[in-house]
Image: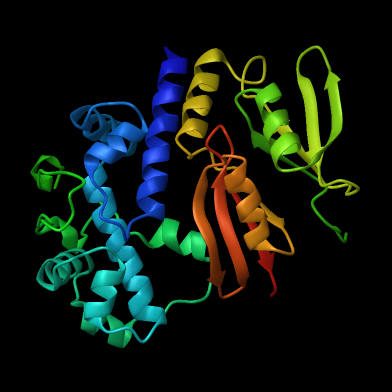
Length: 159
Length: 136
Protein backbone atom coordinates (compact mmCIF):
# COMPACT_ATOMS: atom_id res chain seq x y z
CA UNK A 1 0.00 0.00 0.00
CA UNK A 2 2.62 2.48 1.10
CA UNK A 3 5.11 1.09 -1.38
CA UNK A 4 2.65 1.70 -4.17
CA UNK A 5 2.23 5.29 -3.00
CA UNK A 6 6.00 5.75 -2.79
CA UNK A 7 6.34 4.55 -6.37
CA UNK A 8 3.54 6.84 -7.48
CA UNK A 9 5.04 9.85 -5.70
CA UNK A 10 8.46 9.14 -7.15
CA UNK A 11 6.98 8.90 -10.64
CA UNK A 12 5.08 12.16 -10.23
CA UNK A 13 8.25 13.82 -8.93
CA UNK A 14 9.95 12.65 -12.13
CA UNK A 15 7.24 14.38 -14.14
CA UNK A 16 7.51 17.56 -12.07
CA UNK A 17 11.30 17.57 -12.50
CA UNK A 18 10.74 17.34 -16.24
CA UNK A 19 8.44 20.37 -16.13
CA UNK A 20 11.03 22.29 -14.10
CA UNK A 21 13.86 21.29 -16.44
CA UNK A 22 12.17 21.47 -19.85
CA UNK A 23 9.63 24.28 -19.25
CA UNK A 24 10.87 26.07 -22.39
CA UNK A 25 10.05 23.10 -24.63
CA UNK A 26 6.74 22.27 -26.23
CA UNK A 27 5.72 19.71 -23.61
CA UNK A 28 2.77 17.49 -24.32
CA UNK A 29 0.88 15.46 -21.81
CA UNK A 30 1.11 12.24 -23.83
CA UNK A 31 4.91 12.30 -23.70
CA UNK A 32 4.88 13.06 -19.98
CA UNK A 33 2.46 10.22 -19.40
CA UNK A 34 4.64 7.82 -21.39
CA UNK A 35 7.58 8.81 -19.22
CA UNK A 36 5.87 7.22 -16.23
CA UNK A 37 3.83 4.57 -18.09
CA UNK A 38 0.33 5.85 -17.39
CA UNK A 39 -2.47 7.31 -19.49
CA UNK A 40 -2.66 11.10 -19.90
CA UNK A 41 -5.88 11.31 -17.87
CA UNK A 42 -4.38 9.22 -15.12
CA UNK A 43 -1.27 11.39 -15.08
CA UNK A 44 -3.26 14.61 -14.71
CA UNK A 45 -5.38 13.14 -11.91
CA UNK A 46 -2.48 11.57 -10.05
CA UNK A 47 -0.19 14.58 -10.36
CA UNK A 48 -2.93 16.72 -8.93
CA UNK A 49 -3.52 14.42 -6.00
CA UNK A 50 0.23 14.35 -5.20
CA UNK A 51 1.09 18.04 -5.72
CA UNK A 52 -2.29 19.75 -5.43
CA UNK A 53 -2.47 21.19 -8.93
CA UNK A 54 -2.53 19.87 -12.48
CA UNK A 55 0.70 19.51 -14.51
CA UNK A 56 -0.60 22.26 -16.80
CA UNK A 57 -1.08 24.69 -13.95
CA UNK A 58 2.25 23.75 -12.43
CA UNK A 59 3.97 24.41 -15.76
CA UNK A 60 2.22 27.75 -16.28
CA UNK A 61 3.52 28.97 -12.96
CA UNK A 62 6.98 27.60 -13.60
CA UNK A 63 7.03 29.53 -16.87
CA UNK A 64 5.84 32.69 -15.16
CA UNK A 65 8.53 32.26 -12.51
CA UNK A 66 11.22 31.84 -15.16
CA UNK A 67 9.85 34.90 -16.97
CA UNK A 68 10.02 36.92 -13.74
CA UNK A 69 13.60 35.74 -13.35
CA UNK A 70 14.59 36.78 -16.87
CA UNK A 71 12.83 40.14 -16.57
CA UNK A 72 14.70 40.82 -13.32
CA UNK A 73 18.12 39.69 -14.37
CA UNK A 74 18.51 40.21 -18.14
CA UNK A 75 17.92 42.90 -20.74
CA UNK A 76 15.67 40.67 -22.84
CA UNK A 77 12.48 42.39 -23.97
CA UNK A 78 9.05 41.00 -23.20
CA UNK A 79 8.69 39.15 -26.50
CA UNK A 80 12.08 37.49 -26.09
CA UNK A 81 11.22 36.46 -22.55
CA UNK A 82 7.87 35.09 -23.69
CA UNK A 83 9.53 32.81 -26.23
CA UNK A 84 12.42 31.90 -23.93
CA UNK A 85 10.11 30.40 -21.32
CA UNK A 86 8.03 28.34 -23.73
CA UNK A 87 5.05 30.51 -24.65
CA UNK A 88 4.36 30.88 -28.35
CA UNK A 89 1.80 33.69 -28.14
CA UNK A 90 2.69 37.07 -26.68
CA UNK A 91 -0.96 37.78 -25.90
CA UNK A 92 -1.35 34.57 -23.93
CA UNK A 93 1.91 35.17 -22.11
CA UNK A 94 1.03 38.74 -21.12
CA UNK A 95 -2.46 37.79 -19.94
CA UNK A 96 -1.13 34.83 -17.96
CA UNK A 97 1.70 36.85 -16.43
CA UNK A 98 -0.56 39.73 -15.42
CA UNK A 99 -3.18 37.41 -13.97
CA UNK A 100 -0.62 35.55 -11.87
CA UNK A 101 1.72 38.38 -10.87
CA UNK A 102 -0.71 41.29 -10.76
CA UNK A 103 1.53 43.41 -12.98
CA UNK A 104 2.23 43.33 -16.69
CA UNK A 105 5.63 41.91 -17.71
CA UNK A 106 6.97 45.37 -18.59
CA UNK A 107 5.76 46.91 -15.34
CA UNK A 108 7.34 44.04 -13.46
CA UNK A 109 10.64 44.45 -15.33
CA UNK A 110 10.84 48.12 -14.35
CA UNK A 111 10.43 47.57 -10.62
CA UNK A 112 11.59 44.13 -9.65
CA UNK A 113 14.77 43.44 -7.74
CA UNK A 114 15.55 40.54 -5.46
CA UNK A 115 18.62 39.69 -3.43
CA UNK A 116 21.02 37.12 -4.83
CA UNK A 117 20.37 33.70 -3.37
CA UNK A 118 21.11 30.32 -4.96
CA UNK A 119 19.21 29.89 -8.19
CA UNK A 120 17.70 26.55 -7.27
CA UNK A 121 16.09 28.19 -4.25
CA UNK A 122 14.82 31.06 -6.31
CA UNK A 123 13.17 28.54 -8.63
CA UNK A 124 11.64 26.55 -5.83
CA UNK A 125 10.41 29.46 -3.74
CA UNK A 126 9.41 32.14 -6.22
CA UNK A 127 7.18 30.06 -8.50
CA UNK A 128 3.84 31.85 -8.00
CA UNK A 129 1.78 29.62 -5.78
CA UNK A 130 -1.60 28.21 -6.59
CA UNK A 131 -2.30 28.09 -2.90
CA UNK A 132 -1.39 31.55 -1.57
CA UNK A 133 -4.26 33.50 -0.09
CA UNK A 134 -5.04 36.75 -1.83
CA UNK A 135 -2.94 35.93 -4.86
CA UNK A 136 -3.99 37.88 -7.95
CA UNK A 137 -4.18 34.53 -9.68
CA UNK A 138 -7.38 33.84 -7.80
CA UNK A 139 -9.26 36.44 -9.79
CA UNK A 140 -8.83 34.74 -13.13
CA UNK A 141 -7.11 31.80 -14.62
CA UNK A 142 -6.77 31.99 -18.37
CA UNK A 143 -5.90 28.84 -20.16
CA UNK A 144 -2.88 28.74 -22.36
CA UNK A 145 -3.53 27.37 -25.83
CA UNK A 146 0.20 27.49 -26.52
CA UNK A 147 0.83 24.95 -23.84
CA UNK A 148 -0.39 21.48 -24.49
CA UNK A 149 0.37 19.76 -21.21
CA UNK A 150 -3.32 19.74 -20.44
CA UNK A 151 -5.99 20.18 -23.03
CA UNK A 152 -8.33 21.42 -20.38
CA UNK A 153 -8.22 24.86 -18.86
CA UNK A 154 -7.84 25.07 -15.10
CA UNK A 155 -11.52 25.15 -14.40
CA UNK A 156 -11.20 22.14 -12.15
CA UNK A 157 -8.64 23.82 -9.93
CA UNK A 158 -9.83 25.34 -6.69
CA UNK A 159 -10.06 29.14 -6.73
CA UNK B 1 32.32 28.10 22.11
CA UNK B 2 33.59 28.04 18.58
CA UNK B 3 32.14 25.39 16.29
CA UNK B 4 34.36 24.49 13.41
CA UNK B 5 32.19 22.70 10.82
CA UNK B 6 29.28 20.26 10.53
CA UNK B 7 31.00 16.88 10.84
CA UNK B 8 27.97 14.63 10.47
CA UNK B 9 24.78 15.27 8.62
CA UNK B 10 21.96 12.95 7.63
CA UNK B 11 19.64 12.29 4.75
CA UNK B 12 16.70 9.87 4.55
CA UNK B 13 17.07 7.00 2.13
CA UNK B 14 14.44 4.36 1.46
CA UNK B 15 16.83 1.46 0.92
CA UNK B 16 20.37 1.44 2.29
CA UNK B 17 21.79 -1.04 -0.24
CA UNK B 18 20.43 1.02 -3.09
CA UNK B 19 21.77 4.12 -1.36
CA UNK B 20 25.25 2.57 -1.30
CA UNK B 21 25.02 1.78 -5.00
CA UNK B 22 24.22 5.40 -5.70
CA UNK B 23 26.29 7.40 -3.24
CA UNK B 24 29.37 5.17 -3.51
CA UNK B 25 28.96 3.44 -6.87
CA UNK B 26 27.70 6.43 -8.85
CA UNK B 27 28.82 9.56 -6.98
CA UNK B 28 32.17 8.10 -5.93
CA UNK B 29 31.91 8.64 -2.17
CA UNK B 30 33.43 6.09 0.21
CA UNK B 31 31.87 4.24 3.11
CA UNK B 32 32.70 5.78 6.48
CA UNK B 33 31.04 3.22 8.70
CA UNK B 34 28.71 0.37 7.87
CA UNK B 35 27.71 -1.24 11.14
CA UNK B 36 24.73 -3.29 12.25
CA UNK B 37 23.83 -1.83 15.62
CA UNK B 38 20.95 -4.24 15.99
CA UNK B 39 18.31 -1.53 16.21
CA UNK B 40 19.60 0.14 13.07
CA UNK B 41 22.22 -0.08 10.36
CA UNK B 42 24.60 2.83 10.95
CA UNK B 43 25.69 3.65 7.43
CA UNK B 44 27.76 6.72 6.63
CA UNK B 45 29.48 7.89 3.46
CA UNK B 46 31.96 10.67 2.85
CA UNK B 47 34.10 12.26 0.21
CA UNK B 48 37.21 10.02 0.12
CA UNK B 49 39.66 11.21 2.75
CA UNK B 50 37.28 13.77 4.29
CA UNK B 51 36.04 13.39 7.86
CA UNK B 52 32.66 15.03 7.18
CA UNK B 53 30.22 12.15 7.02
CA UNK B 54 26.69 11.77 5.77
CA UNK B 55 24.42 9.31 7.55
CA UNK B 56 22.19 7.42 5.12
CA UNK B 57 19.27 6.94 7.44
CA UNK B 58 16.30 4.72 6.80
CA UNK B 59 13.05 6.01 8.29
CA UNK B 60 11.31 3.30 10.28
CA UNK B 61 10.78 1.65 13.61
CA UNK B 62 11.77 1.91 16.36
CA UNK B 63 12.63 5.58 15.81
CA UNK B 64 9.39 6.10 13.93
CA UNK B 65 6.11 4.37 14.49
CA UNK B 66 5.03 2.52 11.33
CA UNK B 67 2.52 5.16 10.26
CA UNK B 68 5.01 8.00 10.68
CA UNK B 69 7.64 6.02 8.78
CA UNK B 70 5.15 5.52 5.96
CA UNK B 71 4.45 9.27 5.83
CA UNK B 72 8.16 10.12 5.83
CA UNK B 73 8.85 7.62 3.05
CA UNK B 74 6.07 9.09 0.93
CA UNK B 75 7.43 12.60 1.48
CA UNK B 76 10.94 11.50 0.47
CA UNK B 77 9.49 10.00 -2.71
CA UNK B 78 7.83 13.26 -3.70
CA UNK B 79 10.92 15.32 -3.01
CA UNK B 80 9.46 16.96 0.09
CA UNK B 81 11.41 15.34 2.92
CA UNK B 82 13.63 18.38 3.27
CA UNK B 83 17.07 16.79 3.22
CA UNK B 84 19.45 17.83 0.50
CA UNK B 85 23.20 18.04 0.01
CA UNK B 86 25.41 20.22 -2.19
CA UNK B 87 28.82 18.96 -3.28
CA UNK B 88 31.71 21.02 -4.59
CA UNK B 89 33.44 19.96 -7.81
CA UNK B 90 36.07 21.47 -10.11
CA UNK B 91 34.38 20.75 -13.42
CA UNK B 92 30.58 20.83 -13.30
CA UNK B 93 30.16 19.98 -16.97
CA UNK B 94 32.40 16.94 -16.77
CA UNK B 95 30.46 15.77 -13.72
CA UNK B 96 27.22 16.30 -15.62
CA UNK B 97 28.43 14.26 -18.60
CA UNK B 98 29.48 11.45 -16.29
CA UNK B 99 26.15 11.42 -14.45
CA UNK B 100 24.13 11.47 -17.68
CA UNK B 101 26.23 8.57 -18.90
CA UNK B 102 25.33 6.69 -15.71
CA UNK B 103 21.63 7.38 -16.18
CA UNK B 104 21.18 9.72 -13.21
CA UNK B 105 18.07 11.94 -13.19
CA UNK B 106 19.20 15.49 -13.87
CA UNK B 107 16.88 18.20 -12.54
CA UNK B 108 18.89 21.13 -13.87
CA UNK B 109 21.75 20.95 -16.35
CA UNK B 110 24.91 22.96 -15.58
CA UNK B 111 23.88 26.60 -15.20
CA UNK B 112 25.79 29.80 -14.51
CA UNK B 113 24.67 31.29 -11.22
CA UNK B 114 25.61 34.41 -9.29
CA UNK B 115 27.70 32.19 -7.01
CA UNK B 116 29.41 30.01 -9.62
CA UNK B 117 28.16 27.21 -11.82
CA UNK B 118 26.10 24.27 -10.67
CA UNK B 119 23.64 21.56 -11.60
CA UNK B 120 20.83 19.65 -9.91
CA UNK B 121 20.02 15.95 -9.69
CA UNK B 122 17.90 13.47 -7.76
CA UNK B 123 19.09 10.51 -5.80
CA UNK B 124 17.11 7.31 -6.50
CA UNK B 125 14.68 8.08 -3.67
CA UNK B 126 13.70 11.68 -4.51
CA UNK B 127 16.25 13.71 -2.55
CA UNK B 128 17.56 16.84 -4.21
CA UNK B 129 21.31 17.06 -4.70
CA UNK B 130 23.42 19.88 -6.13
CA UNK B 131 26.88 19.59 -7.60
CA UNK B 132 28.63 22.86 -8.23
CA UNK B 133 31.72 24.89 -8.57
CA UNK B 134 30.82 27.59 -6.07
CA UNK B 135 33.25 30.46 -6.23
CA UNK B 136 31.91 32.96 -3.72
